[in-house]
Length: 124
Image (tube, rainbow, N blue to C red; front, side, top):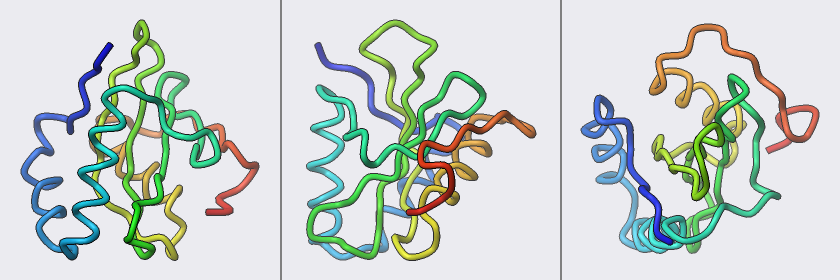
């Protein structure tokens, strides 16, 4: 069963603008990931943590694009397949999990939400 894979409507233009900057190779990788996310959950090794007890945050490696990751969240408070929210791109070397968490907080309108890191720290 396919699920929705899309940005928060209020941030659609921002996310689309981020997708304009990377190389064609990076965007081919992003496109591949977005299609895969319609049917499958991200790999648990790319899980950053649990935000506000209802959003699993991920910073997903992009094929052929080592310097960027795709920031997404799964809304696990809903029935499966969990809706997948696209938050945009984050840099691989600049603590991608922390950047993905900050983007998700802003896009979801959360103020000082709870955070449970998946790896005990932001090792990504």
